[in-house]
Length: 106
Image 1 (cartoon, rainbow, N blue to C red):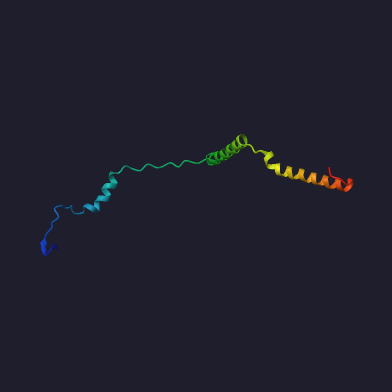
Image 2: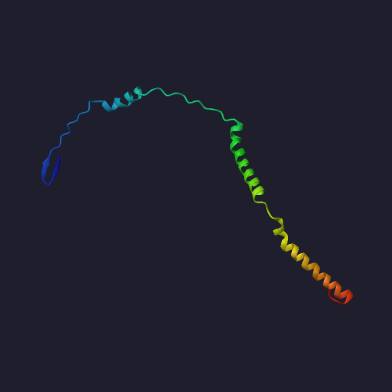
């Protein structure tokens, strides 16, 4: 019985379940399911384990070759400052030796 607003409301459940229905329900469901098939376990060979690493190495090798071929390093730009400095030192040394030995500038 449920009291709502001081009134008595009786709610009867119109649905009935047979006795022992839920106790037998699990067994009925399990009996209606098909038998499970055994899953076969496939063996993984050494080559199948190495293949992803091989592909990764191939990608990096390809990238390295791409950057070497299409974007070569310009060595003249890398050594230009050193070459300029070497020329400067050589000129200064020549001036110094000329002044010391000959007493004049070139």
